[in-house]
Amino acid sequence: MKLSELITTELVEVPLLADDKWQALATIARVPVRAGRYSESFAATVEQALVVRERSMTTGMENGIAIPHAAIDGIDDLIAVLGLNPVGIPFETLDGAPARILIGLIIPRSKKLAHIKTLAEIAKLLSRAEVRDRLLRCTDAASAVRALQEMQATVR
Image (cartoon, rainbow, N blue to C red):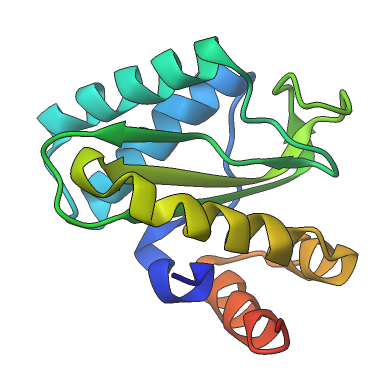
């Protein structure tokens, strides 16, 4: 599944303000609440799953990208959250750079294996400098969604 098919304006946080990766994970867990994807009480379950996954191994990649993700019970469909912070958030990335583009994936445990391809698609898209640069120029959710749709259309 393509990122541009998963992200709606309600699932974008621009800017994603956090002092560290743990605050970023808390924000990622709560964004779907405002989008009506699950209840406020369920957000704590999602946050805890993201934290447990992050403690096992960082999801901070290279080039200012982090893809925190967790498989959980209680949801039927994959939920993706896009967070942008041009300054960056300390995230223990592989290259030591702060994370400026965060893609949070909340994956139904029953469909975990089916979404490995989604992770690969996201990594491929964000490996392109022009995609990262364009996303980081977005100042609101609508422009971020539009940029994703347009940039994803050029990826083969």
